[in-house]
Length: 385
Image 1 (tube, helix red, strand yellow):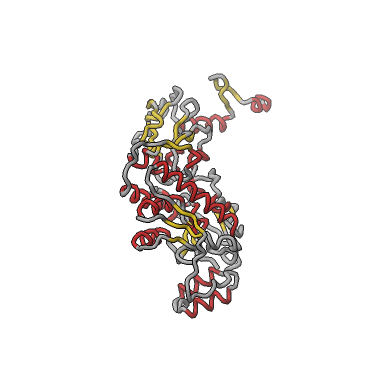
Image 2 (cartoon, rainbow, N blue to C red):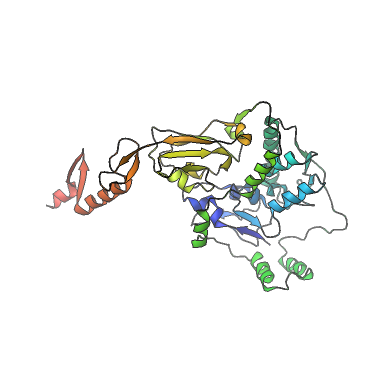
């Protein structure tokens, strides 16, 4: 069965066709998640096991489960006296929680939070989920320690079992699944029935982008896990020293700089940024960056043709407590000789990119080309004459 839902408007592969993000594909234990020909993730519902691993690794929260919401889980868990997170108790799999969730929970819970890995060894979908759980816990603890928080994520072999509950029904037994839903009365509405039928479909579920998705893309929203992280940080004391950590030691945020020798001021990096971490002013003469709005999806890096946008080798934890919007680039505005509109000139250009393209297309139509600043007939045109 599968209650997995994909929101194309949130996927970084939607905001740019150059995105190389494959986190959901890499974490899938049954290898049903794949990148379709249109560049978007696709999967077969009857194969999916609803582990939620793809939810935990997606930088923009494009994936979710119908019957499980990580944001709701966070607030319910915080309000309870529980400190144990287990696949047999309150999550489909610990990997459904991102590193940000783990850090946030650790910061707000009075007691150490425990991740129950007691069932991982016998889990039929152990890999790559188990290894990823350990990596997430290690990263969370490293950052918690660097923050001088005094908090810790504990990984323990608890093997929690809820009394009086039978073992989970095999997710591949579709008949049993439908019977179970029927017994619970979940098939009383057409919507529930349609969802149940869709969940056991053997057809690959493809996704596309419509006008509604395009409108949502333009909103540039932060994922809920980042908002949760902001909330947890507000309840955390600032460290005595703001440490820096290696760029590769943090998976969910980054700091950047721009190589001005190669930047062309094409504007694409901040136009496609899904969260608004990269932005500009009204005249497109500057590029700003806010590290705490960055989800490290790398969409901007994958799109930057001259590879001018770079990751800073280190990340300053000061950004967690005193976020700043930094100026990455500033361009001189000049008036285009052709259309009269002001545009950012990087290397002394006097014609804006739009007019330059139009001029190139016009020369091509006339059979002309520019060589060393002089417009001449193309070689093939001369031969025809």
